[in-house]
Amino acid sequence: MGSRTALVEDLMERFPHVPREAVFKEDLLRGGVAFDPSALSDNEQGEVKPKSYFIFSFDHGTLPELGEAALRRPPEEIILTGGPYDLRRTVVSVRVNPASPYRVAADEDGMLGLYLDGKRISDVGVPPMPEYYRHTLANGKSVMEVAPTIQWGYLIYLTVFRVCQYFGAKEECQYCDINHNWRQHKAAGRPYTGVKDVEEVLEALEIIDRYDTAKASTAYTLTGGAITKTVAGRDEADFYGQYAKAIEERFPGRWIGKVVAQALPKDDVQRFKDYGVQIYHPNYEVWDRRLFELYCPGKERYVGRDEWHRRILDSADVFGARNVIPNFVAGVEMAEPFGFTSVDEAIASTTEGLRFFMSHGITPRFTTWCPEPTTPLGKANPQGAPLEYHIRLLEAYRATMDDFGLSSPPGYGPPGPGRAVFSVSSFMDSLPAQEPAEV
Image (cartoon, rainbow, N blue to C red; front, side):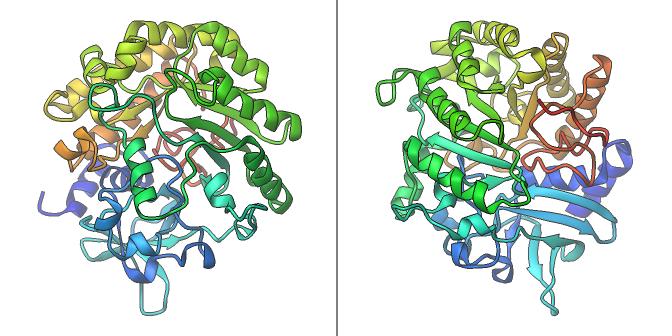
């Protein structure tokens, strides 16, 4: 294909049942987007909500390589609408790539647009600075640092432990830059709290609750790096669980409580439930056995793939199958030099995993892989997985859900093109537009 536009249009024609919005969204997520200076934010002093770097970098370059985008942050997310493809409202997480064929820039009237191969393909909306970001904690920390919100304000993302105890080449997941992201923010002199104090989290949530008068924030996620030993004398279940307990005691029923943690033994999972967590995300990362062992060496060493999967199924006894929602990193299946070399093989493998979990009533979700350059897989695969893989995955995902009579999982907002707010993949954009039954 001679241009990116031709490739995208070919895929839209070949897969008409996949929303056209999802085709563009997946391409932006897998390959990133460049920003003209006219489209950057004025950080926390401006009118646009800036990118918070809430856990990973989700960029195609290190901060020093991003140019002005490292000094004036791009927006947290963008919304695509209209244009020659008549796009419905589509929320996309921002992943910066100065070399991307996609570019966000303002026209002569100051209106932001998304350009591909030099042609304007949609209008671009940016998130307004929320009132709660304009207020600081008593110690001067910003709400954005302690409790940033994503998914157009739907989700409060509480990365309470910003490093991972799977450390070094023999333990770190090969696509994950959580530890590097911590290092680069500290090197740049940015505030980036390693272990967040429970009282600081509660204070930030007080501010959000006070100023989020429209109640746009509906859920919170507790997460961070894996804990193989202890943090502050607590094991993983107690460390993350203490925050849920404190939040639920201070704000009973205000938000849907979710935790992203390792696949833990059933007794530990029960502690999460007892602390007030409502949804559990024990991410399985990649389905194929060989790739799991290669890409997740720490998880293989400490737990093992088979035991990881057993624990996911066991956790359904505690939370109910509908409230167990493991994530996988869509696209690493095709990463060189070990991944599948054809889209057919990769889709077959991933669908096998979907069928395994969905046959037990568990609905996985996925994040579109961003090949961050400081990771082994990102370094070896700067282009990520082929766009066709991502489009066919959306098709396979919806078909598998239909096979098992499942609907969109709770805690992700409304499904459907033009309505979804989940911003780091298009799985919610590609599902039927109906209200999910929240927990």
